[in-house]
Length: 353
Image 1: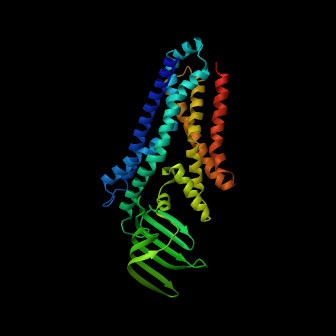
Image 2: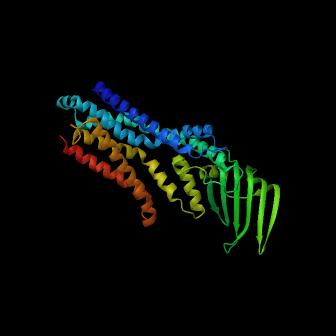
Image 3: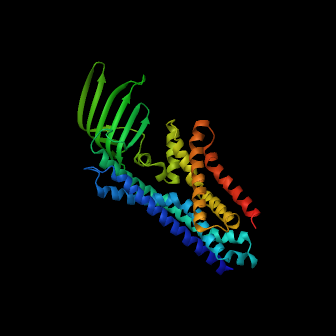
């Protein structure tokens, strides 16, 4: 029986890896083409290529669930097309045992996704974002679509690019009074965190005093903020590039500032429940092979797998913003499609012969 488990597992794992490789290849190609339109004297072809390459781990993490779904359909479909599944069932192998055999390579991919999402994507994702933002931003104050906006108390701030060590390139500060009137605007070429506070370098500040403006230029100036380098690092990252632990810490900070972080909370639950999402999609794939897709062509299986994966993804993407608008828990938005897949997959598996 162990030999049979290994055979099923190897077939499914190989199919999943082939599908993942194909999807990542297409994603990298389209991402590279998309970056070409932004090329300039500062954002060169070399930087664009590096940005795309650094984005690959994030794509691997994102597409592993879809790859498991389509890969299981293809792998089990191959066994069904050659009547091997029929022979296994005739020999007394239960569908539950086959599901367990399929789950073993999937567990390997789930662990791989978790390691990539927690330890690789936060590093490569931020590095990719920093390099592109530095190339586009230059020394300009809010001169690009890239960068990060944030509010803290009476301050609005924009960071062009943030290094992993907390160094800021291009910091714009807007200070407001109690009546929400702009009283000062500052731009620092660079900001370093030293001895518990920020040190702004090459600072230019414009004070708005009634009908006249007063400009001050300083080489360095101290700036006190609750934003520490570790929090600033999280602030500079896309939610999809953050680890589960980083998302949790960022949500805690935003709550302390009485700010909403709905996108980050959604991403937290999405990453935390990704293993369940993968297994629910695998259950759907197994139920299809034993049921309505056991006699169709390989192309039809792939098409159905992609459609189911897209419906699953779109349902989570639609329910996520809906949870913010209508006030229900983001956990419900992420968990609902998973529960629906488990129920549908279990029902079709029992119904299939």
